Length: 92
Ligand code: FES
Image: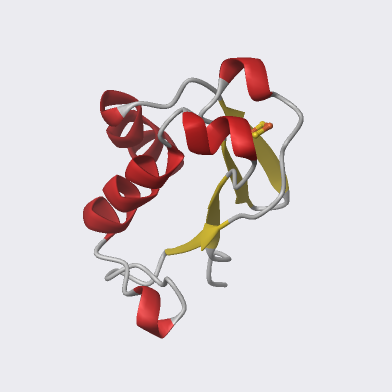
């Protein structure tokens, strides 16, 4: 049995944009080796990176990143460069 792909989605709402979510997205893409021209799939094929467009309702603690792994949803708040690496370690 193969594990399902792990999805990582950055919030696309206005407050998270103001809090630098675009830079966080780029850090995830770099860490994962994700090719956005090819659907955001990571170099190892384990992750799919998605640029979200909707507010996740947690604007006060953004930037918000949401992950889906094996049917579970995980929400990460105040994501910065250090947290990007920790999130990926936790999800692997
Ligand atoms: S804008 Fe990101 S949670 Fe609202």
